[in-house]
Length: 185
Ligand code: IMP
Ligand code: MG
Image (spheres, rainbow, N blue to C red):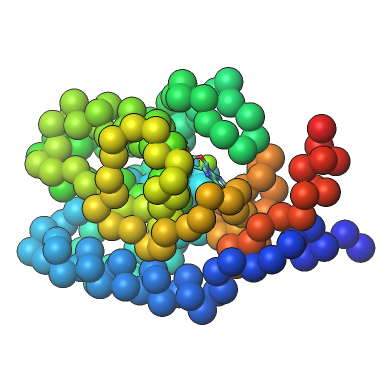
């Protein structure tokens, strides 16, 4: 039977490390937003697993909303910079303390576009929380207010992150065998 494990070259980040990292970010958010009721805005689909764990690591009252964006024109491993909103937020952001929850800060193109778009809706504040940061790949001037872990300049999958929509359900962060990519050519 085919198993995702057969496609994996190495595990970069274990379930245990992910758990500790998410717990740490959750406490930072709970401390920084004490007395407020932030809205956690999850950018689908990559942040789905992180969001589910992070919201339970936040101990203060908060609400959640979801947005689906896609960068089109890119390939399976790079984004094009053209961002399309597939599903917008359900609620209004005006006067709210908004925390964008995203899987990874790569080129930063998608997030920098999104931050500007959501800023225009006049929230009380807007901050960014990314589980991973790939500083070597930033193309725009952007920083994340909450960062889980810095990762090397390698394409990673698992814990919500995909390659061609697969491996999101892999519980750890892994690097794929080169043969997986070559089979797709
Ligand atoms: P950016 O606009 O280049 O920052 O693209 C960000 C998006 O690209 C992320 O939300 C991910 O969906 C995807 N992405 C970037 N790097 C990786 C990776 O290493 N693995 C899986 N997806 C990635
Ligand atoms: Mg994605």
